[in-house]
Amino acid sequence: MPELLPYTEAGAGVPLLLVHGFPHDRRLWQPQLEGLGHSAHVIAPDLRGFGKAPAAPVDITLEDHAADLKALLDHRGIARAVICGLSMGGYIALAFVARYPAMVRKLILCSTKAGADTAEAKEGRMAMAQRIRHEGVAPLAEAMLPKMLSPSTRTERPEVAASVRTMMATQDPQGLIAALHAMAARQDRTAMLASIIAPTRIIAGSADKVIPRSEGEAMAKAIPRSDLIMIPDAGHLPNVDAPAAFNGAVRGFLAGMK
Ligand code: MLT
Image (tube, rainbow, N blue to C red; front, side, top):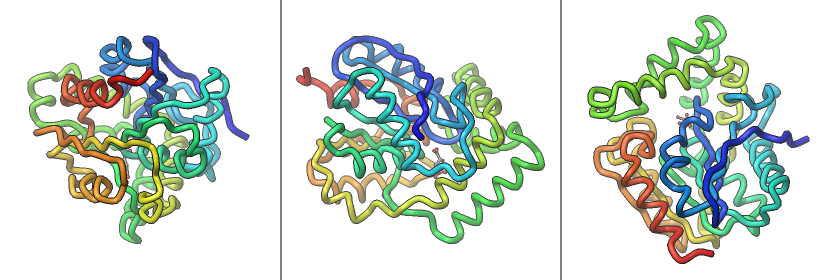
């Protein structure tokens, strides 16, 4: 059964649903909640198992997360929205568009990819889950920080780096373990890209160390009505590394929508 997710919202206008990645929660979208409220009705939930959301069962799937998002839109009386997913949030956005295509007015895929995990990637996730069981979440947060943000954010805006570190370090270990299993089991969505009818904007950081820019370039080739905005020098979280550029890319994509 879908769960009603906690969320933060800002602004008015076209509904824009922001789906966070791993191991994040809705705090990831603070620069968008602050910067996009004049252009859209921004809605940022915590996914099940993250932030203040209900705990996730160990066998939760990305399709379950997509069903939770649909339940949230239903609850808010929103029939169609712009769906924006970052990284794991992008995997979930692709599951959402596969299952509920009529609810997607436009799609934004950020720092993400369509393919499934390789055997090696799955092993890496199981090793990470084991590490979380033994050591907790804090060491993982410390190790992941350099992969998330650009060097300039980390040195010139230490308070931003600290808040991303805190967001990651305060996640529920069981939620992260469930998400690792869900990502390892996710479907390959490559074949469905050609059938996406929603106008799609792909946003990537040119210096992303988690998901290479080539993945964004490949999706832009495969999705019919798509374009690609590459944000220079941004890492895996371009919405945090370069909020003005990211928000500008979203604002431009929403321009003219009512
Ligand atoms: C994320 O940022 O959501 C994750 O790095 C995605 C992944 O591990 O595949």
